[in-house]
Amino acid sequence: MSASRVSTTDRSAGKSRSSAILVTAILVLVAIYFLVPVYWVVVASTKSTQDLFASNGFLLGGTFSLWHNLSQVLSYDNGIFLRWFLNSVLYAGLGSLIATYLAAAGGYALAKYQFRGRQLIFGTVLGGVLVPGTATALPLFLLFSQLGLANTYWSVLIPSLVSPFGLFLCRIYADSTVDTALIEAARIDGAGELRIFHTLGLRILSPALVTVFLFQLVGIWNNFFLPLIMLSDNSLYPITLGLNNWRSQVDRLPEFYELTTGGVLLSIIPLAIAMVALQRFWRGGLTEGAVK
Image 1 (tube, helix red, strand yellow):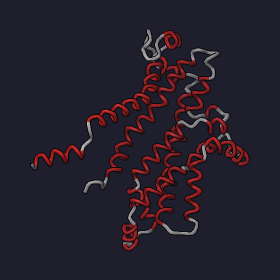
Image 2: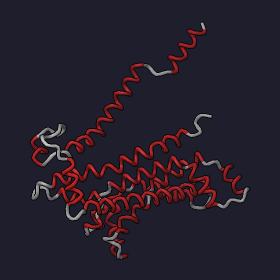
Image 3: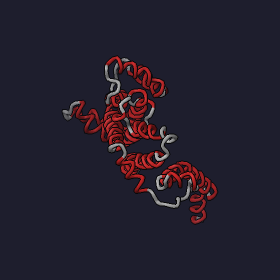
Image 4: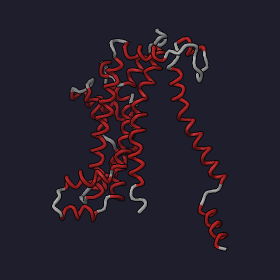
């Protein structure tokens, strides 16, 4: 009787075989959807221009030209690709770090401090989430032109420091995870507000901060429209704008196909490394405290 009861309970608590197969099949399809373009880029970067059009897009060509293509990418025009790469690291790396910190500070303040206009500010932030970046690119260009900052690093870096989605996420996360009693205990112990935020708030908000950082990193790294409007000096280009500049020349010089495919392959490596390196902090932080 007890064994029957246990088996019945196990079946009711677990998932059926058909639902597990369905979920697995959907996840496999989603994975294929995202991985097929990456696979195509890897294969295309191993081909010469002739093999790129003469062979199947998902199969290797007659000659393995990966190292030749990558050397051409890194050496073309006195290594301009390396300059674009470092520019993207500056824009995305520094911009993501500062944007994440500002989003954490703003979200923490909106969640844990009571002051007049708090809901109005939060509502304005929600409105900022709904505004696409392309809608603000032209007004930003006019503003930076009047300030004399157009066609400089600042014209791309400064707009990247603001993350309405990040502030929204940090506010929601801080409201549900940062215990007010813990803040009061720290105040009783004599800790100042900045110290409480840096020692307690940032540590508790770490899963949200990793999420904001990754979203901001990918968004800035792949940003194309804002640099296109702001920059005219190709030495200031990020990778996205530089690769588009190469792609626009393929009709005149077909060898730019090799440069473009090789450059795209190199451009996705930093994002892949960031995702692999940071996902354990994200996953660990989300499950921290779930089991006691």
